[in-house]
Image 1 (cartoon, rainbow, N blue to C red):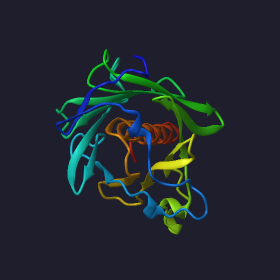
Image 2 (cartoon, one colour; image 1 turned 180 degrees about the horizontal axis):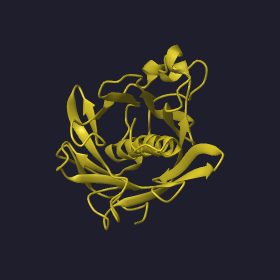
Image 3 (cartoon, helix red, strand yellow; image 1 turned 30 degrees about the vertical axis):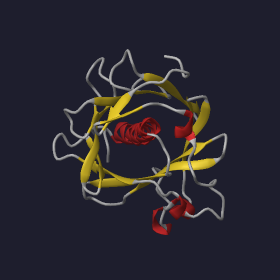
Image 4 (cartoon, rainbow, N blue to C red; image 1 turned 90 degrees about the vertical axis):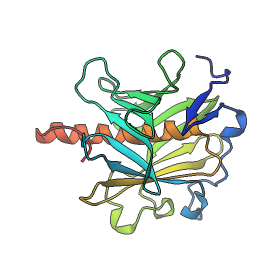
Length: 228
């Protein structure tokens, strides 16, 4: 599907269209003087669902906004299917990465109407991903910076991530892992003005990379793969 088309999608019952204005986040780059408070959009939490435990409930103020249905073994099923609000809600995105270093991510209600983008990994030794959305280039990177909300005692963890607009060098989303045995696994903070579609792409990028790390850890230990 062409990047130039306006693609309708419904999130939380509200219909939206891709527009050029959607791609104008309001924060500065990830420099030494950038404060985490500049990410002034909404904050979402990643939480394990009670059953199945592999799935992820993405919540705002303890209320589900999205549910990520994660599948590692079912043939021909996307690795992640993102639903609006509940596990049986409308599909708003999906990601494929089972047999690839990269992540194929789609936003929309079905295969035929989705906007697809390829989050390309820089290489075996490079853990950054780049992708295109509405003619702009974004990168999905690891972060250890306290300016991105990573606490000093969390900096040794490898699962903190951010999405950067490579045109403006603005950080538009940050995922900070939570070092806990409780159901909460991490927190996403978004820049103000991020469109619902770009928000879903960021969520799928964070979820897919986190799932890739968990599966790799599972293979190295011989245990079941999935979110740790």
